[in-house]
Image (cartoon, each protein chain N blue to C red):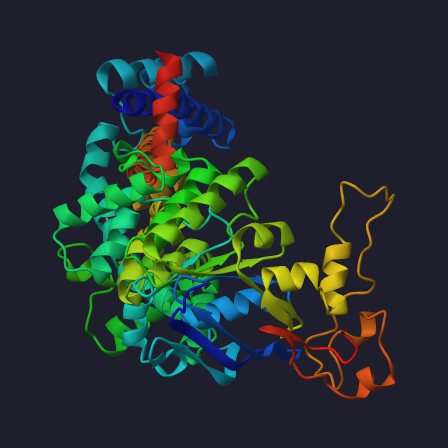
Length: 322
Length: 316
């Protein structure tokens, strides 16, 4: 593999939500990096803090209730968390774009889809209306929406087509980084594949880096080069696809694989991970996964394991994972 | 689209027939004999009988009703007042502009205050401003308008002497009545605007717009307000009809020679034919307002517009 330049560097990111019933520690010291043209998967169950990380990179978290409690996010040379609101507006849509989970609600129902693609072009590029429109049509055609449907409204499109339009908006200004927050969760399986293939092709064509947030390990295996497994706001395992899938180390990651049905095995039941994620309002002293872990020992309750190297580029947060 | 409009206009007919029948029946069933009252205390039985014949009151109820409807639709004749024996249509033509002016004026006050305050308090949710505005809104909704009218007269006419307390000679006379009618409606519009904006604020497409790098002001005007406008417009059209009805109280307190004052006076004096005419005009006005509201909806929301088109295809 050729050497690639670093695009994104997240270091020790901490995000909290201030609520009436206490401080929710949503993200607790997450660090990872991303190269140009690389595609990374962030996997974890609901409430693990995946979307919070994504919205932090976009600086789209509502503050309050959210609070950036520490860490830094560097994109190219700039620290995103220290940028002014005005500069952030120039970064959003131009350098970093985001695709949201539900395409049904991600488009303004009262505007034509063409106008919505055109909008992002007009914000970031000094083009005349006519040229912006031409470009918007080009981009719509690139994602497989016919140009003559420019004047149609979102309600006239199916879910999969809407997600294509959302992708068109996200990629209109050729961003360096695309964050896709569960882009296929709301779609059925055949459309899922189309949308994923589209993201992959566009990524190759435009050399965009992608952060793919999902809870679907199958999608990650198909799409990503690296994976970060997140549990309770912490990365518990990080590595290249082959490492995570073939040399699974963390008991949580193993649990995730265990809860996928295997077509070759004759099992009556799936193997779920027992218990549920601990209350994120309580800061845990020991390992975040200890309560549900099958191989826990006394030290797991008292001391927090560090994210330590278990191989070339393979990191795991567990005392006994080897 | 044109077909839809024509269809909607035709729909006004059955509504009017239903409304007129209801009012006609209620007036007929209400106690008191108009003939006896309007001929005076020293009238003979023959005088009373003649009055009944002149105004068609001797016929059975259903015949009276059909006669009335027939005359209205063929000649535009709303009958003659029992009291003054002048045409009802003429009386209404004289007084309706006052009521309409009052209602429109109070609508302007409602919209110019209610919508901006609603937007502000939604964007600064839970701030001090939001609290104050919500509190004032509560007061505005719960204050009876006849009482408010009297307080305004007391302060601005009696103590300060700035504005006249009764009449309708020029625009100055309309200020206090319009403010009275406007305050209750303002509170409703403000609260609807606030909740509509808050509802839209949480929508994903607002996040999409933010993710595009769009400016906050553009997001508010282009993406939020347009989407929030449907419930607001619904409330505006309801407020318009409510304001018309409110005029009965406001015109009475401020002694304005409007149609709603005429309506109230006619109810008191059992001048049923005038009551009938005035209510018909109010009903038609409300039907028109509702029609316009629906057309505005279609202009704003492509989903509603496409429904019309689909129906047209099926119908033709």
